[in-house]
Length: 79
Image (cartoon, rainbow, N blue to C red; front, side, top):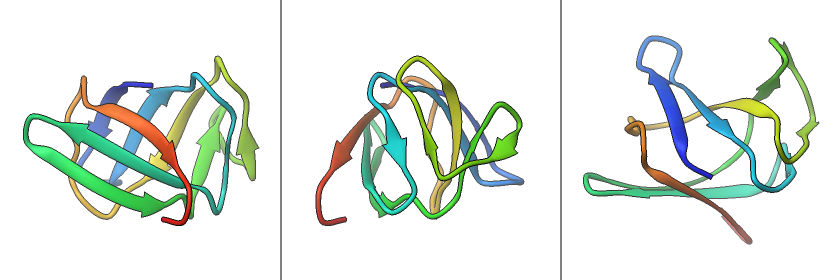
């Protein structure tokens, strides 16, 4: 998917999922000024904390570093 928004106060990235995403899976965010790979430790969908979110849902993931709207998000193994 692509990053829709990032809130630097809460460190939450908002993205529209193209594939299901589950807590514990890895994501890689790549952009012109971004290169971040980490495990999903906190996932929100529909305004509440969830263990997994489905393709087509708008989800929020807490990140360790800043990302930018438009950055590409990939699911990775072994993050």
